[in-house]
Image 1: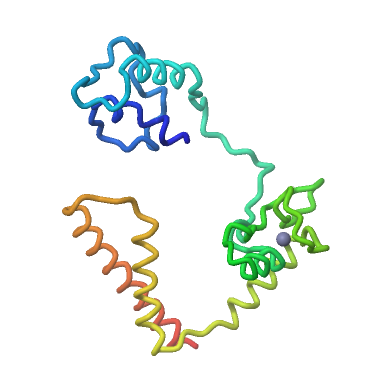
Image 2: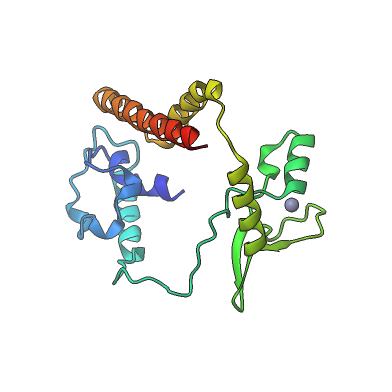
Amino acid sequence: MRRVVANWPEYGGLVLDKSAKNRPAYESYQNVDEIPFNPDKAVFPIGLLRAVAQARLERTIRRLDESVNIKTHFYPLSAITHCATCVRRAKEQNDPRLRSALGGSDTYGKLRYRHKAGVKCGCHNRSVMCDILDADFARLIKLLTVRPEALDLMTGLAIQMDKLNGEPKNEKDLEQEKEEAIALCRRRIEAAVILLAMA
Ligand SMILES: [Zn+2]
């Protein structure tokens, strides 16, 4: 929704250098009456677009400093580990939306990974201490080895993942991106080879 709303210049026929999600509203026109919309290319009424621009301008918040909350913690496995019961239900009902990722929670200094709130999947354990899960994960990582014959497939998957995570680019950027991706993969392969040799 935020991205759609932030797209008001494009809906008014304007072409800007940054994509909507990278444009904070406070960097926009400070006087909405001066926005040079292009009525020929607009897909919404100009009056509505000005109203949207004005509303965003009034609601935008400019961060005053870049300070860090020292009480926050890293939860490296949050959002990438999922509740097993939820995953099983998702498979049974063929509905990937049922998968729920664990989040981090800090209760009086006790750090836990916690089940998504409000989702009742039938599991009894709603949380696990971070130390335990982190240690389990580290143990798994240490057991991992890369089979040389799997390296090509993994490289291919890594390229695909990079593509999925990137934003759509124009033709020229794409070529450059491909070259960068290939260079990155070469470095990964070299690193993997060194790791293998050490193992
Ligand atoms: Zn669950």
